[in-house]
Amino acid sequence: MSDSEAQQPSEFENPYDLSYREDTPRIRTREGVELYYESSGDGPVLTLLNNYFFTAPFWRPHTQTLAKNHRVVSFDQANHGASTRLDREPTWEEHAADVIGLLDALEIEATYLVGTSSSSQLARDLAIAHPDRVKGMVLAGPVFGLKNMRRHRQLNRAWLQTLQSHGLAGLYNQIYPEVVSGQMNEEGGTPGFLGLRESFLEMSTPEVIANGVALVQTGDPSSTLLSRVAAPTLLVLGDDDILLSPRRGHQVAELFQDGRCAIIENAGHMPFLDEPELFETLIAKFTEEVEARAARGASVRG
Image (cartoon, rainbow, N blue to C red; front, side, top):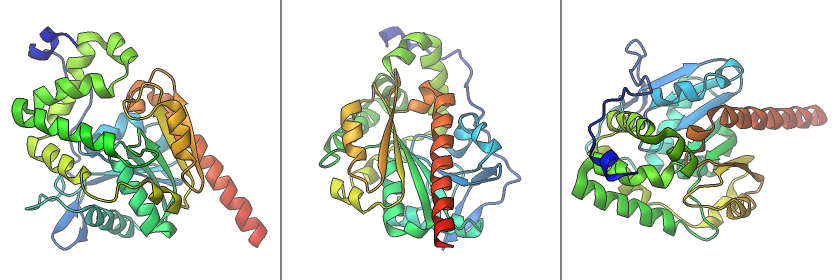
């Protein structure tokens, strides 16, 4: 990214339709908390867990194909987007309780979780605490390491310092070359940089980002927790990811009881930005395999 890009006012339109569906009722998940959600399609359920950079509408263009054969549920977490704003940031346990409350309200017995970056922690915690509600997980750009999550937390602390000193636009200038692949950066050029910035600034506020960064610093970072996840788990990793190399990604996948890793070439920390069609294909293939395995198991037990 050049200095001119960092300083240039954006003249490019937001590439995403981030408007909310005003006719969608909020779901009450616990005392004082109502969540905005969207649901489309029919079939095995995919529940999308946002990190603190994305809102529910962001997922529409990344799940259109999946919605043909799946039920896709996206939502804004409490303190984010169009959901209830509280006086303090919920804990990981409270965010997990909200997910279960949402599933209960939508009469979803079990779901596949799709987590990205920091929300892979929430997916992990849900799979451990509620194994009967999680059929499988797809974790894109997971923040887990072979031992702990030290590198990810260091990045988050650096991002917080930038946010406090240079605001949201300055934070975006730092994050963009870190999480976007080198190929996407080169091919998108200035229009890609400025277009995605419009989305980032529309979805985020300094308070939301600061609360999210603080939340990331909490919870158990130990990689030993991964061995407690019984649900089939697919890690989707770009080979230009800032946190994990492809080899390390496969090693982290082996820490799960039933884990595997798919590498997307020339993709970064958010591989669905680089290769949205391939990302949807990987999810569809994974859920198909898990569903078929479950059907065979039910047939044998019957």
